[in-house]
Length: 191
Picture 1: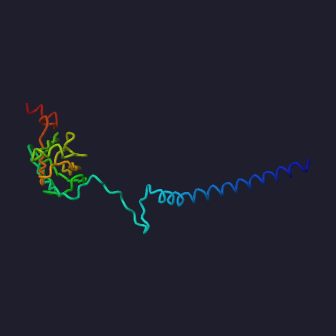
Picture 2: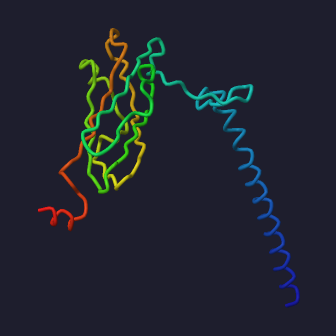
Picture 3: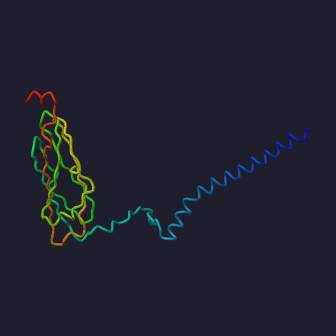
C-alpha cells in the first residue's frame, strides 16, 4: 500500500513536467509566429505594409487622378432665421480624392426650428460626378434657440468628370421646414 501513493506522486510529477514542456513549446510557437508570418508575407509579396527600412507605406488610392486639379467653390444661402456659410470659400481636389468641408449655421431666433439644406451644382454637367459620402443635407436639422453648429460635407469628384470642367460650385440653400416648431403655448396664443 505504501508503494501506491509514491507511484501516483511520481506519475503526477511526470505529467506536470510534460505539461510544463508543452506550455513552454506553445508559448514559443506563439511568440515566433509573428516574425514567421512577416517573412512568409514578404516572400509571397502579400500584405506588405512595412518596407525594409522599417517605414510603413499606405496602399495608394488608384482611383485618384493626380494629373488633374478641380477647384470646388463653396456657397451658402440662408432662407430663414439664421446665419449660414461655408467655413472656407474654396478647396482644390484631385478627382477621386476624398475631401471634407465644413458649413457653419447659427440659429438667431429665440425658438427651435427645423431646417433642411438643398444642394445645387454649377456647371450642371458636374452634378452626377459630385459624390457625397456624408452631408448634413441628407436629413432635416433641428436647431435649438441660438444654437451654433458646424456641419461636414465629405465628398469626392468622380474621375469620369469631363476634362473641360475645372471649377465646380457647390451651393446650399438652408431653409426652415414646416414653420415654427417653438413653444406650443406661444403658437396657440398667437392665433
